[in-house]
Length: 619
Image (spheres, rainbow, N blue to C red):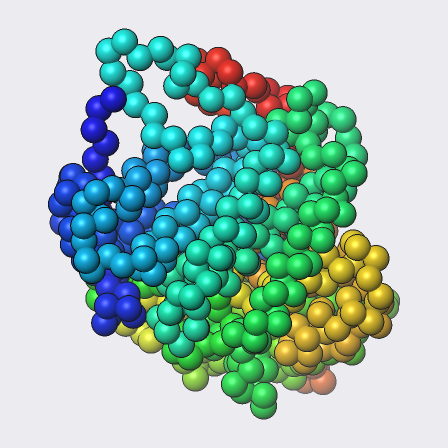
């Protein structure tokens, strides 16, 4: 067999807390090294490992900005109509066997004679490297399984072709979906033991939560198990099962997976290393925002994709900042839709629908823009910039137009964003919202706050933002514990105890009884823009029910909120604000998730190269 080599492509030097620094710094691309070059030098080993960390950002994030607009959290805003409604067969599909092979080469190198002769590479350091590498491999398998179901598991094998090799020996059949999740879960358990004594197990030493540690492994174990459990329980249609189990998990196995998830979250909770971020009990909205901004001594974030300026930054702030506070040309690439805003409850009312009209269908008039959002779930402030809220201490105004009376009916005047009409003054704010093709203007009446940095320089193309992207945090551990305990039939007092910790941090009422619908709703608002929503609806088999191609549905159609200022001198309502719910201009078709979308199709090239693979349902 040909000698395998380690490839470092667009690598980053990864100096860990163990070796004295924490930054990811760019290094020269396209480098190829032998085992002898790598495993005689801890810095080189760190560099290879850092490269692997840099290759695992899959799905909507602060880099895949567009991805957020394909769920029901945001819409494309800058520019005109985007004519899409369905999901491609390869949507967020992952088949990362080159990555798995690279990890296997690295693991083999750790046990090589070269590594054994490296006196700096002692047993404890080896365990940490092995644990981290195996975690990244498990993370890759998990991300493949989310879309494809059961995938080939190659374990530690390193496959390569040379003259005389029997190609049949290089072809690996798909494992069942259950076996794929079993492998991920078992790996995470083994990894947690490998990393039992890792220095990075302490959040204060795991700088910016950048590295996998024992608790990260247990968090993935919990997430994989809760996915498997819900797939087993909620797959009720035979169309989503294959005869040999490559997709579909037996319903009888649901409780086994829920128990695994419950045990893993219990271990994390009892470990006492992490807790909900609560450094500002006076302003819970600001507190929730700070959770995603404050990377120093953050007790909640278990694992994150870190960025460091200058050098490694992203354009999430630059692309999504409101027009009136932009730092460069760009603004409003994607913006929140009314659907997600109304998913946030009121403090004492679980129905989050905004009160824009009375029972008779007439406008409700507000003195100030911000009055509409009084007593909302504090997480709304931390997640979304709503009309009349502050960002960088700047009042963010949205105005679609003016309202005036004509023959007893309210009519609208609109204008170009930011232009002042000589007779009527400002008609449409520079922030919008509008129904038109203007660039950089909000079409929904909101902006994203979560992951958007307040530093004005971060809103420029040249500098970018170094806000991290959270992958696992303690709130998810509590909500997985709530879901698992609910599905296992634990007492409601225990189920409520988990979910109410998260709700109390949001300043909303505690629950005395929890259903799966409560879990779904809580996940939606807690994890908006964190790459949960699409996968959650898939595992619960709710996506086709909510995104059902109904142009009049509040769940599949996108809506915007248009504020209007009343301009009717002499009228008691003059100068007040009214709001209209309108269909989002850039998204004229309802979201349509078909049954075929629950599992990605296998690429024909993969099937041609490996006849042992089986096609997924509807393929």
